[in-house]
Image (tube, rainbow, N blue to C red; front, side):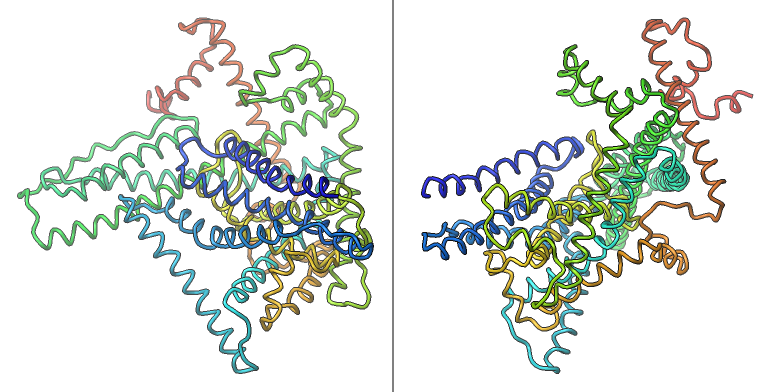
Length: 617
């Protein structure tokens, strides 16, 4: 017994090390290479702590069930000292990270000020407005509770209750959509034809959004260029000079980004001359004007950074959708060699190194061929059926969570006695991981998320990765506590710590037992598409989960327009690939390359403007 207990206790630090290693590898793949080290460490810590909470819950459940079994058999129970001490440290570290540190770092990265101190001050000031709003709402709730019966509970209990109530509300809304949408999405994926129609409609909306962000970026670039061109050359103010220099650097970065996103030439520079001043010294009025102008430049730089990031995220989403549509079109037309080429698109250095071996490449291509041609539809339908069963089981358990006498929770049947360490881990991780996946799948389908997300191949900016880490940290503990109530296992160390909030009025035990009933209501609404109809009725397009174009049009017109956009993108990519191949075959001189492809290459390199033909007339 002692050796088995030591092995199980050793799994905690080993599991934490494994989670940290996997999180580091994943974030290194997603995040941009220029990310701030402090921001990267904060995001890494957020992912590690959040996944640590999710991974520690099954161990806590097993330890509780094993303790109950040991007491019944008059055997020494396993020690829970390490679990109890771990919960307090992990929870409060996660709490401070997601509610304090990550929001400050997100605003710090978005700030347009020109010194670290000014950026930190702007970040704290912006976060203070949100916290002031939270404080006002909390004060009103406290006054109402005081008038109705009195305030009970410690400060930590109120903090846990407020954080848990926010997380439970958000996760309930997200799961109400995801528990229906995930099985439905997997079922549609098994039929490329039906999924293509939905993808074509999404392509119209995403193309509109992509072009809109690029136009907005071009407008802000012109505004910033005009501001830089009015830079004074004879007056000397170190703060103003530094502001103009940093604004100029950000402007050049955004111009380069715009050039890359549009596959065109860099926008032409305007030849505006700077205004002259008659004196090189600054009086008091000039200093005040200089300070005001620095604030204006900081605001302009913040806007420039924001629209640049939005344009980059929109293009990443568009590229992912185009890649998906091209694969689905090839599968629909049974063009398996082309589909195999799309599905085998490896870009990482490790993947390229492995697939240089002929045997590894042949094995992968054979399995991919078998998957795309035969196994894919059946596997996706089986996965859809399993997810649908899990969704029904979870919803039934939530409908009767408020009752202690009778229950519809089928999951609770697996946790009436100790089933062993390995079996308990699997029985916990499968439904808990599914609940987490449905919640976060819904988050990234929501348009109000502001294009935040994780984009592969180092395309995820600092704000996005911090936002994802903060959101995961905010929802991890409420989801795990909700799961423990769902399986009806009592006496865990996590429940003992979270149980402080049970004495808090309104947000305590009753809220956690009654509010999850709305998951069933939301699931029925999504099955009947009631939610989408209400969103369209009230014009709340930003709260829509699925991407749909703003303009009113029939489904046939949207599908035709989306198909045309994907065909155009396929031709463009084929031309680029042909250009690269012909350029490699023809050498540096470019002989033998068709004139049309040479012109496309010159435009891409910035040597010719987009309107070169009209300019030459």
